[in-house]
Structure formats: structure tokens, C-alpha cells
Image (cartoon, rainbow, N blue to C red; front, side, top):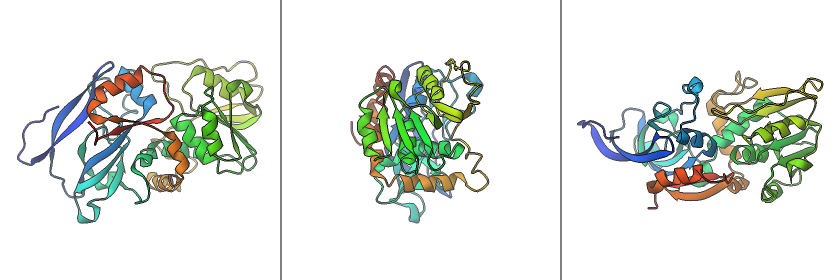
Length: 336
């Protein structure tokens, strides 16, 4: 979207906008010079959060939660036109001297360069690969979910759905001293991922998953996965729901032994620090933990294909129309 000329405008930028159902375009805008405590960042990579961004692409964000689901740097309102996205890794090219040349993670949409407050930028460790750093949003969600219902020593745990979010939860849980950790997914290709996590984790088909779990983390965003997750819980067990269904209203099987087992369903959402840790942890503290967690190279198993930013309108529709890979799709700003 072209802006009105301003004497302070110095830099051209290009951003991806969703303008109508299943249709996007690249729009040009002009950036002012960074103000005090601001920086201009050149994007290296952005990540496509497949579940949420597919809903945005189709115009399926419910009006009732449109304000809640706004991304931190979103421009425009749901359904259209909207500039959306929240996984961005770039390098600071203009700003305070101490920031120049530093790679940063931010919750910014798909845009080749942008102005942002320094307070919204997270400096990345030199040893953290830029592509892996895009997983910061998924790992932050995973940490929050584990805070919402932390496993205890010797627990029996299942993660239903091992895409980007479920996979991140599984990586973190593989470090806990649990009795068993099953990654429940119908895709046999996920067995390789489970093997990467070590002896405590195993992949199983939903038909073979073990019951009597203490905690189940559900991230398949499917009605069948939701039913499976509840069926695996033991007495007084808790299911943590990480899926977002948009306008869909999945059936929740609350009959049979749901009440007899005294089961609990807990929603987990990353916009606030989980209540169990909110008094002692800030969002910045949580992000520090994210960067430490991302030192683990197994997270690279959750990275998918690279796509050119300049082809993003076609890429978004192609991804929306295809079977999800369960990995993070990466937008590369260097290729044509």
C-alpha cells in the first residue's frame, strides 16, 4: 500500500498483504528514519505459521476473536485487507551503534525491511542459525503449554499431533524424567523425528497409543485428534489444548467415561504467560528460555522448505491448498 510522501521518508519497503479470500499481493510502502529507541531491520527470513496463517489467508478468523488474534505488528483488520505474520529474523541496518549488524527476532509480518522499537527486538546469539531462530514463536508456545500443565517425575505423557507446535512440545518434554513419552501421529514419517529425541520418546499411530496418561498435549487441530487425546487420559488426567480451530466447531466427546474419569481440558495460548508462572516470569524471561532451548539442533527437524518472498502470493495459496508438512515453511528474502 503506497503511503503519502513525507519529507522524513527515506526507504522503500515491500510487504505481503492478504486482500481477499485466498488472495494476497505485495505492496510497497515507504519507511521513515528510525526514531529514538528504534531500528530499521532488513529481513533475512520469515516463517509461515501454517495453521493460523491459513485461517487468515482464507478469511476464517472469527469476528468474535478478531481483536484477540491480532498479531503484535499487524496492519489492517480481519478479514481484509491485512498485513499479518509474526515470525521474523533480520539484521539491524540503522539504529543505535550497539545494535548495528546484530541479528534479531521479532513478531513482525512478512516484509523485507521495517522500523521497530528496540524493545520489540530480541538479539540472537551468534551461534544460533537464522532459520532455526524462526522457531522461537513455536517454542515459546510450547514452553507456555508446559507451564500450563507441567509433567511430574515419572508421568505418562502423550503429544497428539507432531507438527510445528506439537513437535516443539515433544522436544522439550523429551528432556523431562517421565516414564513414557509417546508422539501420536498417523504419519509414519514422524518415527524418524521421535528417534531423534532419544530413548524416552517413541512415535505411535493413534490406533496403538497407550492409555492411562497423566497429561496429554493436543496439537493436531483435528476433531479426530481431539477425541484421541481425551481417550488416552487416565483418571483425573488433564488434556492441554493447543489447537486453534478458527470458525470450525469440532465435536468434543464428553460422553462415555469423561465424567467418570474426572478429566480436565485446559486451553493454552501464548499471548499471556501461563498463570502458574505469571507472578515470577515475564514474557522476556520466557523468550530467554526459548533461546536457550533452541541451542538444541534437533529443532532443525521442524524446518521445512524455503520459498522466495517475491513469490509469496502464489506460495500462500499453494500451501493453503496442499497437505500440511508439519514443518515451518520459510520465506527467503534473498532469492527471486
